[in-house]
Image (cartoon, rainbow, N blue to C red; front, side, top):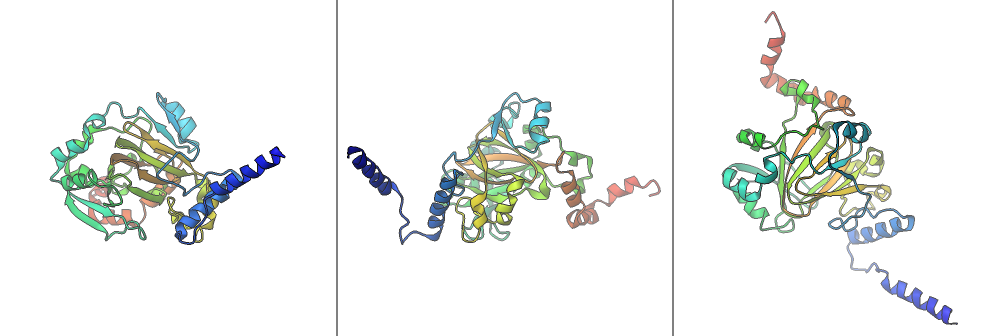
Length: 328
């Protein structure tokens, strides 16, 4: 009798602990709850639940003292992401690139920052113009909710201040075969990301299906990554990982992810065609390159000769072609 009473009490306790879906919850909240319940039933991680917290998913490898040979055979050739914790130890930027340093040295530089909209995310027209000093002041005194603006994919800073190039060097793991092509067939790199706590990079696959690496200089970032075989569940990367609409994107329930959190001194390798979503856990500064290597030669070369490259060729690269013509 006591066993039966105990069992009934446990059932009542479980029912009280269940989180009900109240009538006044938003549709997104309902979807997150449904997704969590569905995935718990089958033992899967809850994609879209509490994405500002973690961890929730299997972890990306973290390695130090990684040899070039092991990197190639264990990560590059199989197309597997990895966080390398000591790839930038010799960089001047490792210690000097702080918000105060960049403000004091380059603060007068004009920059274009991208404003995030909850519905449209980033659009070409949603930009603001200011000095780097003004932007740094805003992101170090506001979070994403109060100031959703991101200095993202900025490569012009390196053109205006070429001394920044000497503050870092490409780690030995990431030889870029684009170097063997004429400049008009390449995209400009490196690029800098700088943003407030909570800044979001939406789910995407990198341009031209390149490989990519990113080094974190200030702050921490959480990465959620999906391997190429998960593409069928990502609805052309239109899903909001942090708040998925499962009525519009039902296949996302089946998506499986891996994750990592990187901090100052860490470098993440993102293989070709790996979709990823990123959130800044603190105000931060990152430096990144996309590059061509084994595993993405075809997509990179195909895109390098597309209309964008032809336009560059027509507007500024005839001199390079003339050098190849011995009769010119």
